Image 1 (cartoon, rainbow, N blue to C red):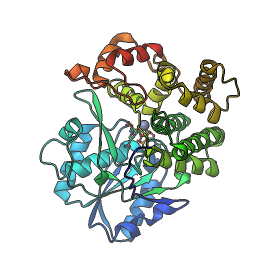
Image 2: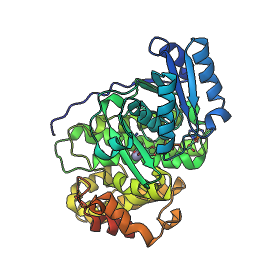
Image 3: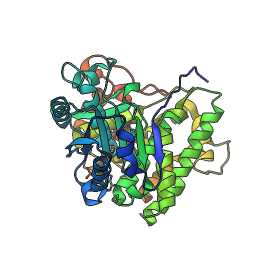
Length: 392
Ligand code: NZQ
Ligand code: ZN
């Protein structure tokens, strides 16, 4: 196990009706709030009305900015920064999914940054201040409700970059599984693929003596795989959504990755896809993950045998580990297919044209400073290109 430093202060308010407490919780913390939301689902579901009523009845003043799109755009972040400065906003409330939360975090740090906030995504320079952010989560997926990360698309440059700081961890996040009932079925699949990937990025490692976190990762993955089909069958299954929602937060609040080298190659490769083709993040991960597994597993076959047996329930001979691993990967791909997820880049209308460009961008080779990605196996741009081609 490696040295680690774990601190995940986001307060999670779990359960029915918790969103009605936002006014009471914000009253002592905020003079004026920016209420930030997406393309309209919160208005359709009535959630917007309930949040606005909670703020008003507690006497919390607010201004609002809607219109966040999946793969949140830098241009709206700029608009939000201007609005917060003009209105002297001192707290941001994100009501939505990962895109709304990430846009909120970008605005939160941009307000205090003297220059284009995009510079921070490019340089990774540490910030010293950010407005506090709280969230009301409407889709279990990105884990942004408990992470200190934000991922934003610079639509002019066709780049999608992440940035992380402890200052960006939400102060609190409401996680009411009933708010997930209105999700389209496709979003359930995207969310589950993303949550599983957040575990995979930490689980597949060369670090040894990680029994506790191995077990936490495996339990999180099995919880997701058990409850996703139940929620898909009945989109109002509170118990199934509860398990998915809690698992999504555990998958990405940092705990299951402590003390182990992490990977993150699939996320790096996926962000290139969603930057250029504007696809759902989870859809890209569902396509890439089985291909990545097949490309890298021989570098640490024991880890992939463990996955096949402990997570995918494969019962086979340890004398043929390749067959065991392949069975585990095939079962994962079949599970993704059952959730209605795409199985190839062509399913996402992506062809060969820009694969090399994306492989070079993902590894930095396009910018003259190649930094191989991944932990379990270091991938250069030629490796990334090979994986893109495997899943074409
Ligand atoms: O915009 P609205 O109308 O609200 O519709 C959204 C959107 O179209 C809809 N939706 C959300 N909740 C709903 C709902 N529709 C009906 N009922 C509800 N309850 O779902 C669509 C997708 O929303 P989005 O916020 O984009 O989804 P998600 O939470 O999957 O977030 C994806 C983004 O998070 C980033 C991804 O790259 C992507 O940009 N990530 C952020 C991370 C982080 N900050 O820590 C880590 C992740 O790895 C990920 O990269
Ligand atoms: Zn993700």
